[in-house]
Length: 130
Image 1 (cartoon, one colour):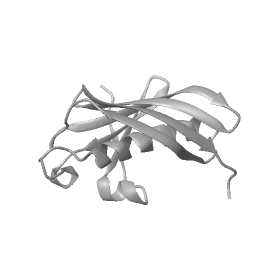
Image 2: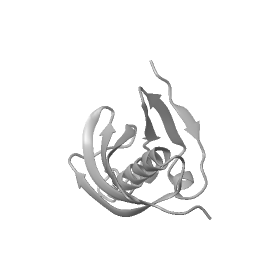
Image 3: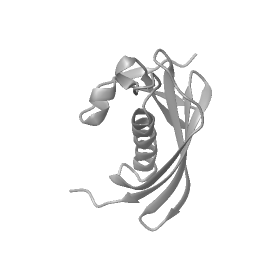
Image 4: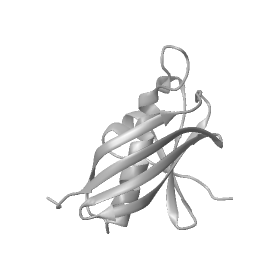
């Protein structure tokens, strides 16, 4: 069994996390253990929480694909398929489908305890390091 590693990164993910990661075959998967702070008024996980984890995953995969060159999100389309709830583990997977110049095109999927709850399509742009 592959175990999760816990991170406390700076920025937004600190408020949502701790962020979890693990290596699966040739890629990284990112996770978040859900609790009451992730919920909306209806008692389900807020779409912003789900989107933030998907954005982190596609960004991290784009960064790795680009040889650790910074990448920014140009577009992120998210489709919510099922609700997620407190107590579940969200896991985000992403892959690069195409690269053209400075642009990367990725797909992402989000699972809650192994159940598909959202999909995403992203366009990322490689930028020059500061």
